[in-house]
Length: 75
Figure 1 (tube, one colour):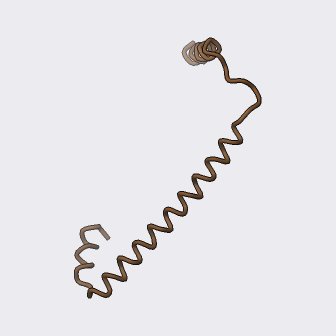
Figure 2 (cartoon, one colour; figure 1 turned 45 degrees about the horizontal axis):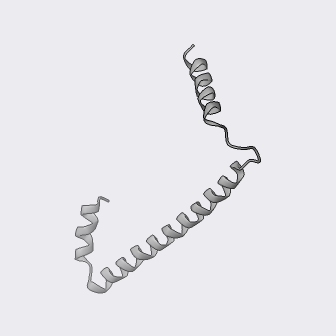
Figure 3 (cartoon, one colour; figure 1 turned 180 degrees about the vertical axis):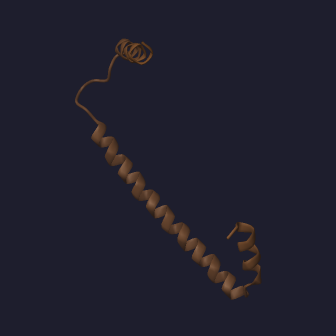
């Protein structure tokens, strides 16, 4: 059902049924924000997995790595 059709059908409902519909929509949105919180927690855990004891590469090392990748890709 398209959004416009849904709106038209909503206006056909009684005020109490429209209120119930709005409540159901709000409840579904609250459940969505909960899943985003879970997703954020999973992302934080994944970032922790990427941590290393090694120091970050220097600017020169990064430039050398990028150059090496370009050579492998284009030659």
